[in-house]
Length: 263
Image 1: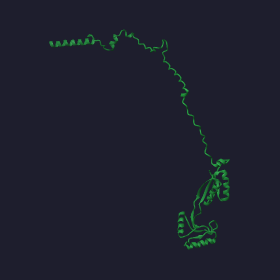
Image 2 (image 1 turned 90 degrees about the vertical axis):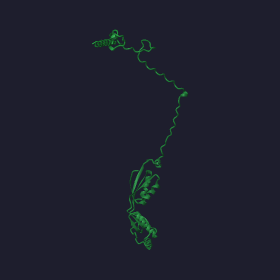
Image 3 (image 1 turned 90 degrees about the horizontal axis):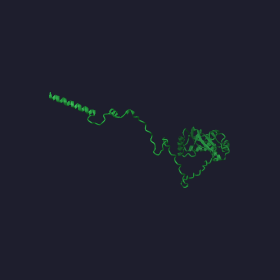
Image 4 (image 1 turned 135 degrees about the horizontal axis):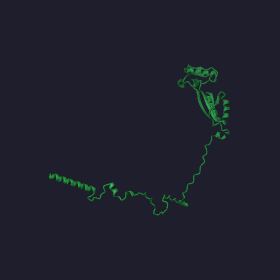
């Protein structure tokens, strides 16, 4: 029993000591929280918080407006001295570019017109004749040759003789060389008195036959187109040159059919 009583007394003392420490009776100066800080203030309800006044510049007089100070206007830059003004290089003189010289026919023709004609139904000889006439009339005339119908066959022959007797003498000469596949053309026309030595579908076959005849010492034979090719030629140029050309063609090639075309 004495021990228990002693422990009870010690426990009561410890509780009292803890209570004194909590209440600050032991001399503690540290605040215990926000409620105690408010209770320690003097008349806390009387305190009024006023917004702070804007700061004034020390150099501004009293009563001067406190708004933002406008930015100062920049002073005009001094004009550069005469010797400091940069010199702008003078622009190079413009060179007039002349247009290219016009063709001679454009410079001389009053109407400056350009016409085109197409001539059809020509054989090779007629086409060559027309090209030759065009060059003789004017160097400004241009020609364009087109084959409309190719040859249907190639003919190995001896060109037409001056007379029937001359053709027969040539036939006798050929028979003496062993050439028997031949005949004299008797029909009137440009091939009359010619000696036919063979008719072929392709030009290469005709040339091969001609080479065989030459090996057998046949002289004077040639290859010609049987049913020759038909050509069309387009002729274009200035009107001043085309007028005499059409008259010349009508005189030298009366069978040539002509029509207008696009130059």
